[in-house]
Length: 489
Image 1 (cartoon, helix red, strand yellow):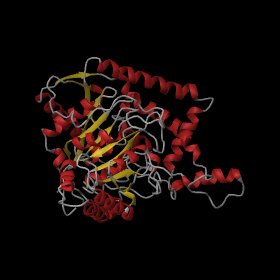
Image 2 (cartoon, helix red, strand yellow):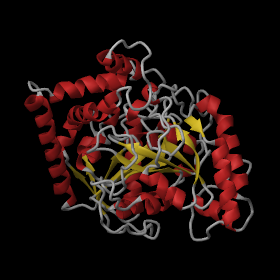
Image 3 (cartoon, helix red, strand yellow):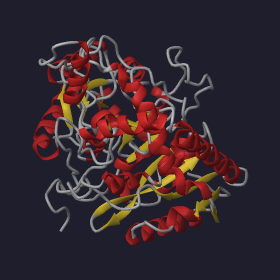
Image 4 (cartoon, helix red, strand yellow):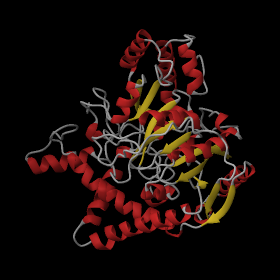
């Protein structure tokens, strides 16, 4: 942007003071996105004309002084439906799909005055950990464009890290907000399951999916939660619990906070550089007045195995609706109804989506249900019980967000199991339905590392305040990416 703002508060004040208009801001944002797009490939659709029309309307109506999103461009992961705007889930099977309704989170942000700037790239149907499975091509990490941005919300993470927008939405099924947030040096929050409506989210695994904010700092994530959180009668799993003011809860005071650090989160498989940065971060939290003890989540080491049975099982059911009949891609080569189904799905789905559909269908089959699905469900229960035991004595759990920094594009695509292990630290919170945030915690070889904070159900305020205290006493969130191959010198 020709005029750079570090946070939503500064940007909002400039709009209120008429230092710039929403139209000027939106044009600057669009220019920035297009300037970066060849390097990043962060977007499936850039909403040029309509975004400018929305910004003009905001200017004509007047910027709402009490609403921080009034006139502000926001990007949406392209598995969130947007009325009349292409929504693909980064899949060929939805390459031409324009929904007739907005997702609940989109409706809420639009009502708050946000401008829909575009739809961000992702792993196809949110199935992946590197944003390399997209039908629309790989997203690149702005810290080093030879590295992946993480996944599946890699486009949202990359465009926020690049400074195109201050806020974007992602979705998190097994770490798909937090892991790319860590890889891109931004803040990413997965709320408690049920805190944010899933209405309009193209489902991957319905008992695990959750929508959340991706921003450059904790305060902006809290501000976004103030808008998107709340009950929705169209989503039977959304909670009717009162939504607190998350921004007001950011005191930065963590004196007396009891922190548990699971020994499993700093053990085998964690990069030495990451482990060192996280240990330093934990010492910072102690210096701010928190008490820290080692704890154990013994069944979390089985979380990946359980997740890759439960998630694909739900996906095999959810993706049955994509059949070439009602919307999206339809094969031109079918001679009968059976061929229409088979060829449409064979041609429309990518390899990773097919792999997970097949895995899930197998796990749900009569001969495998007890041996696989039921065992995975039992492990999930054990993981939930492990968290309950720890949270009986501790306020939050902290550890690394991802076991390594961002890896090279193409480095893990030939080995799905290696790719799946990138979610080993994030999956447990999804299985237990808990709120968790990733906040920048340093660099390893010039690439960002994330500190993960996990809390009790519906205790986003404490999770965010812990992250805020750390952020306000470090400078990692102020570091900017190089936007080049090879990263920092």
